[in-house]
Length: 491
Image 1: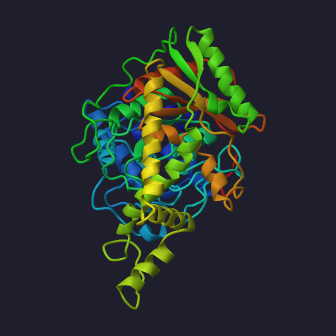
Image 2: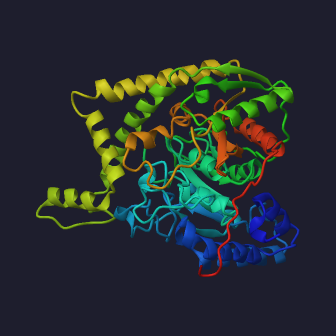
Image 3: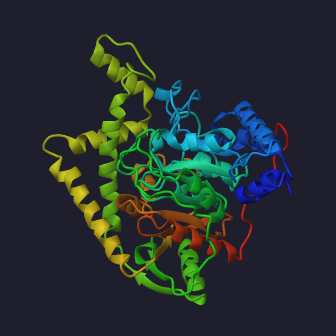
C-alpha cells in the first residue's frame, strides 16, 4: 500500500512507531498531487517547500525523543479562505489574488503548533458563495469520481483533495452546506461543528452568523482526531463557546442500541433522486437492525429555510464584503474620483455570483424592505431553531440526505442560480440553527457516483455524530470507497 492510501489515523500510527518518516509521508502526497492535480485542479496554491521543512523538523524532534502530538507529521490541505501568515489567501477571488495575511487564523496556529505539514491552499467558490466550485475566479475543480462533474461547493477543492488521496485531511468552512454537500459529492466525511465550537478568527467572513470552520476527512475517526485539535475556546473570537475542548477520539465505539433516531420526512421527497432516498432508508433499516429506535419526523419549515438563508446570508455578505474597496488591501482600480474607484474595483474584482448576492443582501437591508425581507427571514430562523429544539427532546440524532442528488455535470446549473441554490436544501436548516451536522458516504449510485447521508445532533454533541458515522463506516457493504484514478506522468 502506498503511503497516500492510508487514513490519517493510520499515518499517525506509522509515524509514532517510526515505521515511516514525516518526510516520506509528505513526499508521497506531493507526488500524488503532482500527478493528479493538473487534471482535478483542487489546489490554488501548492506549498511543497513549506511541507518538507515542517516534516524535517518533526522527524528531527522525534529522533531527539520529544513527545509529539498524534497529528505531528500528518499533512493537511487548507481551504483558501482561512488566513495563513506569509502565504496568499485569495478566497478564489481576483480582488484578493495577491493578498497575503499578516497573521495566522487560530486553527492554522493550532496545526502549526503540533507540526502538521501544509500541502497547499484548496480551491473554492469565490468567498465561499456557491455549491459547485465553479464560481472560483481561477478555474473549476473536477470531481475525482467523474471529471465531467462538480465536486460540490464551496469547499470543493478540499473535498476533491481528500477523495483523490491528495491529502489525508483538509479544513473547510461551512455556511449553508459548504462542507457537507461537497463531502457527499466526493464520497468523504464532512463535519460542520456546532457554531462556536471551532474558532472563526482568521476565517474570511461571508455570513458571520453562519460561517463555521470544519473538517473534511476520509473517516469519522480521522474527523475526531482533527476536531480534537482545532476545537476550543478562543478569546479572539467573540462567538467562541467556552468548554469546547474535548478529546473526540477517547471513546468512538458505536453504541447504537436504544439510539433515538428521527428520519426526516422532507428528505424522502419525490423530488430527490430515488437512489439517494433508498440509501437513507437502508441506513435507517440498519440502525433499527442493531437496536436503534427509528421514527419518521417532520421539519415543516425546510422549504422556508432555503428562502430565509438566501436573505440572511447575502445580507451579511453585503456588509462583510464592503471592506473590499481598493484602498486598504486587495485589488484596486484607479478612478476619476473615490466613488468611481470603488465601483470599478468591485466591478472588476468580484465575480458574478458574489455581485448577485451583494445586490440581494443590500436590497433586503435597504430602507422600506428590511422588515419585509431580512426581519421576516430572521423570524423564520427562530421558528426553525424551535422545531429542532422540540425534536431533540425526543431524539438523539436526525437522519436525512446530505444532498438531493449525486454530483451534477459541470456547467449544468451555472445559468440557473435557483437550481444551484436548491442543491443546498438538505443542509441549510442545520446551519440556520447552528447545529453540528455530518455527511458520510451512504452508498454508490448506479451512475458510479457516491451518495451521502447527513446526521444532525443537538448543540455540542459532535461525539454522537462521530460515533454514529463510525458505526455506518464499519457496517458498509458497498465499494469502492475511493475513486479509481489512473493518469500517467504528463498525461
